[in-house]
Each structure stands twice: as structure tokens, then as C-alpha cells.
Length: 475
Image (cartoon, rainbow, N blue to C red):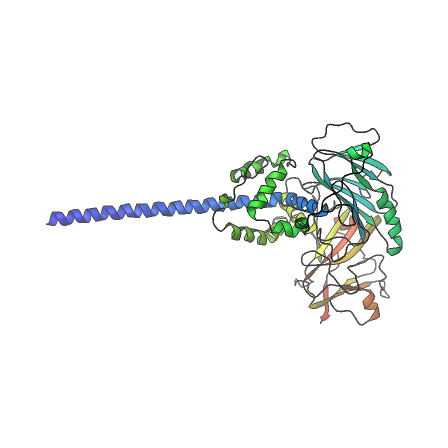
């Protein structure tokens, strides 16, 4: 009887050990799977940061070419759209638009043809930025770049094999998709006709039609592609997003320096020769995707701390802006906040979203910018500066007096000592002088931009600091 009980106890012990071993194995497997998912989502984050400018450029191209004929906001592929007025609060194709300049833009498709670009001579600020599919600046023509007067260029993609006409200067783009963004200074309503003259002579046309003399084909309007580019990208599901990334990269490949990252991303099916399967994202993929996008901007700001330069109450994006190399974090940050930014030598966009006490700027408060005499933003010959208010998402703020910026040509009132006070608030000031110096900011949180074209060396050397945004009174 004792032997039987002993055998039962031994058998129970063996079963217990066996069950514990099974439970331990299951736990280890679960932990391993969780670790694999975490590794996968780290790669997803890297892929999102790497590819965001490419997908945003594609969405911008879709939106800007969504028309049957050129207008002031849209134009078929490889043709210019010429703005007939400064950007206003209904303009949402890109964030942080400049209201001092008239934009002339063309979205490029160089997959099967080259594009002839003609640039007229200009005695005013006219800067023409040519970007590749990843938002890198390939070339600056005109002010701040190469300016040889009246010139004709041939823009070619990576697959171009044709002859370049002797009277054209070739500009090679590393991608088939590209963007021409020209900014032309306009000094008020009486100056619009002069801007229109330059726009009329700033032209883009596919080489095939240029040589044949035939009219380029009309475009196509699709209501489904009538969207705000940044919002469209943000609404893409992860499967749709990365499937589009893979498709775009077939003709808009990165550089050889991207190989190390692309080798890693191939593990989750991302790359020009890859097929993405959303199943790799595991359970709760949609929630994790939304969480990733919600947190990415502050993470990028932290990761790019070395590139963000502080000047008084403002910060600005320093080098290597517009020529990002493998600094994918910085490239994505600029795309999300200042898509199409120019090299710092041509334009610096200083930004503030907090006051001198570190609190968010909001229409619930009233603020004053006190600029001492002789302390205006430094500019080189032909340069200019402007303070512009945007909402929290980077779009212009609708207001009753249609004033979105104050610049050096604005009819402001200076103080007796030569200093300048600018008033930032939602409500119209009662004082007549303050009204002239008033920049409406809306009722909600906002951000302030100080854009300097052709900035002086004092900015980069730290000898000049931007003013701080201070509260003036409670509403």
C-alpha cells in the first residue's frame, strides 16, 4: 500500500514538472513573439519617417495636378500654375505658405519625357527651387542661386537618354517625380502686373510638345483627389501607405547611402522590389499605427535637437535643410512642418509657438512684439522679412481684415525712439496706431513665423537674436 502511494506521488510530481515546463515554454514563446512585434514596429517607425516626404510629395502632385487646365492653384503635369494673388486662409496645399510672395509651381513627371523650363530675367526677388521626389533641393535658380538672366533649362530624370539642345542647360534630377516652386516678390496690388509679366515668361513644357509645337494634352479632374495633401497622407491605412511607398520607390529610388536602412526594411516587405503584407503588423495594427503618427512629431523634434537653432524667442531649422542626406528624421520633420523649405542661405523660417514664459500661444491672450530701434531682422541686399501668423496646423488664419502678415513694407507706426510694437491678439485693438500694427491670430492656439529672405550673417553668427513674444494684457 505504501509502495502504491509512493508511485502515485512520484507520478504527480512528474506531471507537475511537465506541466510547469509546458507553461514556461508557452510564456517564453509569448515573450518572444511580443519582442518580435516590438522589433517590427520599430522598423515600421523607421520606414514611416524615411518615406513620409516621398508619400507627401506624391499626394501633393495628385492634388496640384487635379485639373483639366491650368488655374492659379492647379495645373496638369509638367505645366505651371501661376498664383494670381497671395496665399490666403483657404490655401492648404502646403503648410506655412508665404503671403509676401506669389507662387508659381509645376509638378514634374520625368519618367517618359524631359521638361523645358524657361526662366526670365528679374531685377526683383525671384527664386526658383527645383526639388526631387524626396524634397531635397536639386537646384536654386534666380535669387539666392544660379542667376544668369534669361535662360532655358532642360530638366531630365534618371532614365533620360536623349540629346540636350545646344541652347539649353541640363539639370539632372535623381528621381522621375519632382517639384518646381518659384517665389516672386510682390509689393502690393499696384505691383501685381509686374509679377504677372514675369509669370507669363516663366514657363514649363514637356520636351516632346516643345519640339513639335503641339499643345500639351489637357488634364483630368477627379473629385476623389480633391484633398489636402497632408490630411490625405495621414488618413492612409498602413497597408495602403506602404504599398504606395513600394510603388513610388520603383521610379524614385533613394541613394546608395540608403542601402543599410533598406536592407533592414526588407524584413517587413518595404522597398522598391518588395511586397508589403499588412499581416506582418500583427494584432491591433490600426491602433498602433494611429499611436505612431500621434507621437512622431514630438519624437522628431527631440531627435533633431542639434538641427534646431534657437534665436531669442524663436527657433529655426538649420543646415542641412533642403539637402538632407541620410538625416531621415530631419527630412521628415521639415516635410511635416515646412514642406518645400529652401536652403537657409536663401530663406530662414523662424517659428514660435510659446511665449516668453514658455506657455503656448493662444487667442485667449494678447501679446506684443517689441523690436528695438536698429534691431529689425538682418537681411542682405534684395532680402526681406515678414511676421506671419498660422493656426496650430500651419495654415493661415481667416480674419475680418484679411491680414496674415506684417512685413517691412507694411504701413505700421513706429515709436518715437524708432522701436516697433506689433500686437498679436484675436480682438481688434481700439487704439488707431495699434490697429495698424495688429496681426490677427484667431481664437485658438497659433504659431508665429518670422520669415527672412536672404538672411544676413548676423543671424547665423548669433550676433542678432529674434524678439520674444510677451503677454501684453489679459483679454
